[in-house]
Length: 97
Image (cartoon, rainbow, N blue to C red; front, side, top):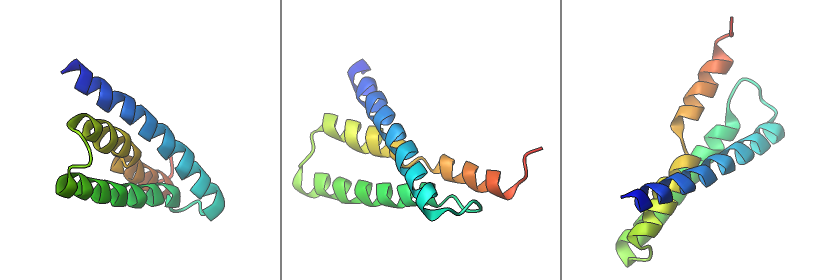
């Protein structure tokens, strides 16, 4: 149990850092302050990756159970947190007082 939690946690750390870096890069390139385009790009890319790799793992058995925990739930789950998109959308739409 602890090993599985560690796999998800370490993968989540990697995914979260990757999300932060990629979203920041897209925000700088897009230069749109009113829409969180970087987070949207991260979520779209991550969801496509989860769908592709999850389908591949199911149909061909490419990933072990531990690899699925680490990669799909940990890394890509941390990469695609939809809550970041919701927060950034509301933060840009609502002035902070």
